Image (tube, rainbow, N blue to C red):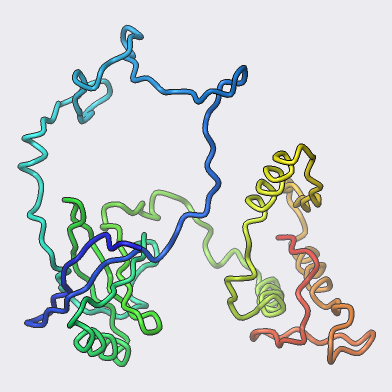
Length: 293
C-alpha cells in the first residue's frame, strides 16, 4: 500500500521522518447506473440550469454563493494565491490529554510509519507519549489543504487522525435536549441495571454489515441464475407516539435479560442472577431482543 504523504513529525527541535499510510479501507458495494433496455452504462452531462444545454469543461468556472442566487467567481489564480506552502512536516503545537478531546473532532485515521533511519526517534516519541498519556495536536498540509491533526499511540503504532476545526461542529445549543431532572430515581436505577445486564467487553469483530452480506448473496445467486435464500431480518417495533409506561418497558427488558442462554455453562435451570449495576459477568446471557423504551 503506497504512502499518501512523506515528511516528518516535528516537535521542539526533534524531527522524525515518517510516511502516512491509510488505516481504514472502504468495504461498500458500488454500483453503476445502467440503461434498463440494453444494460449500457449511463453517462452524466453537465447541463446549464438556465437553458438546459450541455456545458463543456472549458466554459465552467467555480463560484461562491454569498447569497441566494448570487455568486462571486474565483479563478485558478485566486486558488493559487490562497494555497499554503506544501510543508513536509507535521508540526505538533501542543500535547493534550486524550479525554480532553471531544470525539466529534476526529475524522479519518492514518498510520504514521517510520521511514528509514527514523525507527529510534519514532519509538522514543511513542513511548514518551504512552507513559504521559499525551496526544499531539498539530497541523498537516495534504494536497494543498491544511488539516488539523492528532497524533496518538495505538499499540506499537503512532496514528495520525485528521480532525475537524472548531467551526465545523454544530453547537448543541442549536437544539433542545431534556434536562436530567425529568428522570425518576427508580427509572434510573432500573435503566442502570439493564445496562449492566447488556454490558460486554468491546469486540468489533462481532458486529457485521448484514445488509452488505445479503447484497453479496443476492449478487452471487444472480450470477448463477438463482434466487438467494435470505433469512428474514428481525423488524423492530415502530416507535410508539403515544405516552407509554416507561417503568413497565424497563421491567420487561430486565426480565428478558434474565433469561438464561440454553446450554450456558454455570447457569442452573430456573436460576436467575440478580442484575448488578456493574458490567455483567461472562455467565450472564444477553437478551434475545433489545427493545428500547
